[in-house]
Length: 325
Ligand code: NDP
Image (cartoon, rainbow, N blue to C red; front, side, top):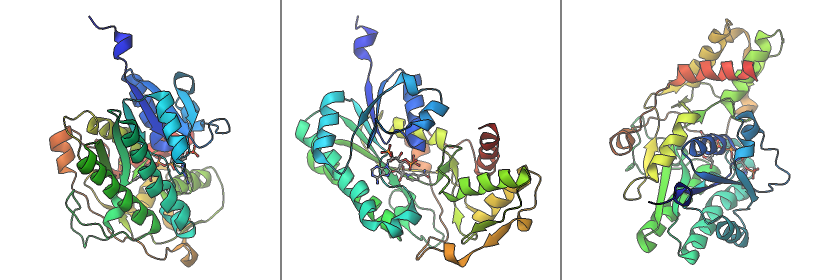
C-alpha cells in the first residue's frame, strides 16, 4: 500500500500573503497538502495574514517575482508542485488607473511567464489563475456567465482579460490543465484597507468607538455581488480536482448597491450611516462599472459549489472581525 507521505500533494500559492492566498493556504493545509507560498520578497514580507490565521509556521515560503521568468522557473523547479494557484499581482482596480503598466506586467506578463515556465518544464502541473468579474464590464443588467463577452473598463480588467485568454490558449494549444476563476468581489477582515468594503468597516468601527471623523466615499450607487472570501478559495481548489480543466464564474448570484453595504455595516454598529458619510467627487474613477450581475450556475452544477454567505452576512462578519482584531 502506498505510503500516505508519498501521496502528499504539494501546492504552490503565488501571492500567499494576500487575502485569498492566506485563506487558500489554510484550506489546503487542512486538506493535508504540503503548502509553499510565494511573495515577491519572502525575507522582507511580514506575512501578517498568515500569522493572523495562525498558520505561518505550517507552510514554507519562497521568493518569486512573476515578472521575472527565471524567478518563476526557479521556484517551480525547487518546489515541484502538483498544483499552482496564481493569486499574485496588482489587485486594485483603482490603483490600476495610476499604475497601468505595473498592473499589466504583474497580471498579464506574470501569467504568461508562469504558463511558459510550466510548458518548458513539461511537468503535469495543474494551474489555477485568478481571473476577475471586472473583465465583463457593464453587462446591461444581464447576469454574466462563462459565455458573456468581455468589455473591460479599467487597466486592471484589461490585464485580467489578457491573462484569461492566455490561460485558455495554453489549455487548447498545449493541453495544460489550466483553469481561470472569474470571481466576483469577495471580502473578509483580511481585505486591505484600500478596498472600499474594508475602508467602510474600518471607519464605521472607529466611529462606533467615538471617533468624530467623516467617511469619504466615491460613487455609492454602484452595484456589486459581494461574497465571503474563505468560501471562495474552496471553489479554486475544486476547479483543480475536476477531470478536465475549465473556467468558472464564482459569485453569490445576489447584487446589492454599495449604499446597502454601507447601511448594513453601520446598522450592525447601531449607527445611521447618513450621519457619517460624505460623497467626494475626487474619489470617482475615470471609468467605473455601475451594475454587475452574476450567474454562478455552472459552478453549482459542475463543482458542487454554492456561496453560503450573502452581502449582509459579509458586512456583519467583517465588523466582527474588525472588532476582534
Ligand atoms: P491581495 O492584494 O490581497 O494579494 C495579492 C498578492 O499579490 C499580494 O499579497 C502581493 O504579495 C502580490 N502582489 C501585489 N502587487 C503585486 C505586483 N505588482 N506584482 C506582483 N505581485 C503583487 O489580493 P486578493 O487576495 O484579494 O486577490 C487574489 C487574486 O484574486 C488577485 O489576483 C486579485 O486580482 C484576484 N481577484 C480578487 C478579487 C477579490 O474580490 N478579492 C476578485 C477577483 C479577482 P507580495 O507583496 O507578498 O508579493
